[in-house]
Length: 135
Image (cartoon, rainbow, N blue to C red; front, side, top):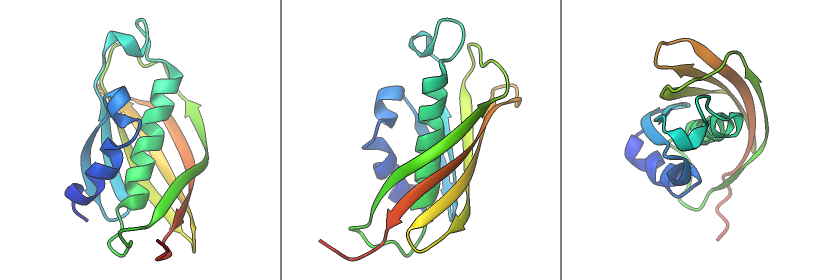
């Protein structure tokens, strides 16, 4: 799967507001990066920013499938994030992997790490991806 196909989907979303960059996209896997800036939290990165990164990385992984039609639609159903340690003044990287693709429901795992490689959060994301060819 080409990063060129997934990147426009990511950049049309909340990702631009947060400043998230898609680093890598392969079949059922994506890596997104959130560069640190002070607006993300005074000293500590706000959990909402980390949650946004999780959702964006997972969305990219779910969309990184070669057989999706151009008019497919998708939306996050829900996710659970476990914050493991404080993320203070560091760039963050989220790696999302699709665990299961069902008929329309997908489930994936996301790991968020700081620049030091220490994991700061993990998440499980559930996503609805409608592959039907409706207009």
